[in-house]
Amino acid sequence: MSIQVVLLLVCCLIVALFIVFRKTSFVKKYWQYSLILIPAIVILLLKIISVLRRPNIVVEQQNSPIQDHIIETKEKLQEVNTVVKIEAAISKEKNDEKLLQLKEVQKITDDRERRKKLAQMVG
Image 1 (cartoon, rainbow, N blue to C red):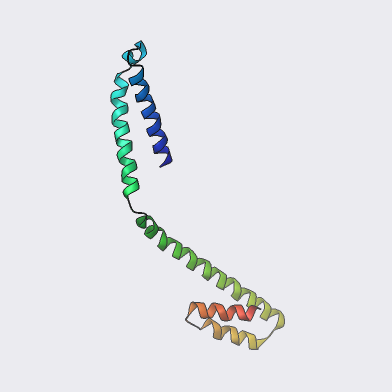
Image 2: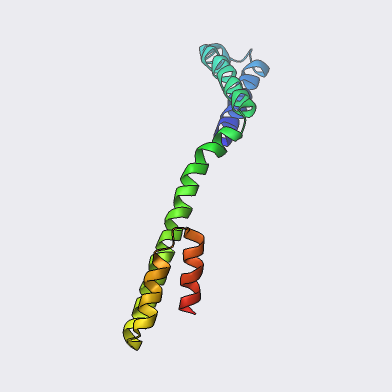
């Protein structure tokens, strides 16, 4: 929106200069450009007003599902990394008891509880 405001200020400045210096030969020669600038200013004003009146809730609702998906994916990646660390530790120790415990933890359906148990197994 800052670009629109800058464009609006530039257009207003040019129109103001056309009005102030209306009797000069330059303005008399190029007065037709003001016919384009004035509607452009009106369109920019209407666009800025419509953006300001639009509620920000719509933008937040569009971002929310995407952010939820990103967070969910990060949690899954973290869980996979934890499982890999545990499996690496089990293979070094050759501990069958921990391997059975890992398989039991992986059967838990609740994501948070499963990740909590995996974190406890790591350290």
